[in-house]
Image 1 (tube, rainbow, N blue to C red):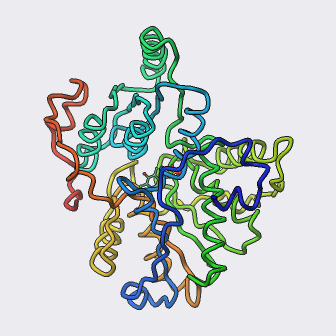
Image 2: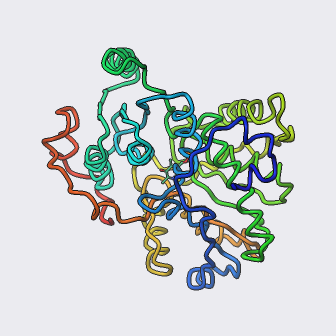
Length: 366
Ligand SMILES: *Cc1c(COP(=O)(O)O)cnc(C)c1O
């Protein structure tokens, strides 16, 4: 049974859950990188291998989101993201495994190799891909696609928000905090002083903040914003935390009504750079450092920027004597070898431009 349900049996009846991943994800000690940064206790929480086929932080959320989809008898799910969305791909992969079809509603972003790969993989895993030029056109697209699918299947697709970050999906990251506490109790690592995590749709950080509080851990979170501040900011974070707590503490549940300190909602901004998904020199350096020392590959949109914050803070001496966890949110399973990759001409025309233009200059790795 998952740690969250073990601690709060009342939640099990309320939250449909579908096991998809392999948990707990390991915690590894950075034997090589730690000394380089002057840290004796630097650990990686290996959500990069959270699933046997495809890992990353979205698996935790999808266990609850697809659990709900199955529970309500949905036939299809519709989700949202930027063109290179790991979340849209992860949804396609696990929805198919759960016997559901998936529809990805995508928005433009800076080009990269991983974006191209995610689009091809999404198609290979059966997702229906749509690309819109802006938020107004995506809103119209949602109406027309929902109607089209409803006429075809008799049911509207279940909507999963961008990044899977609604209270249901976030339950997966509340559970993650309890999973980490078990690992601390088992002696796999000391109780962390601080966890570094990338912040996009905010679900991971919201879940961790609530979960760590409920688990009565002293661990702080360093939330590294990697997306525009109009999408991730303290007010939005606080609102999402409130909505999630309302769901978890609804009638009949035994989950405690914890309070989140406003200081915990302050996002770290220095590693974002100019734009979403645009690699920065600090990010590329941190990616290389971790790969060369520990053999773990990160991405330039999310996890590399969070790792850059670990490196930057360590070099400034801010982490001396601390137990530090870097939460690896990026998939590292080599899924691209497992399915035949389509030619990009098989994708909708609106996506061809990503294959007919150059990737950004700093994108030289994986
Ligand atoms: C989605 C994603 C994140 C951000 O997590 P949120 O819960 O959306 O804030 C971080 N890293 C990677 C690799 C992701 O795909």
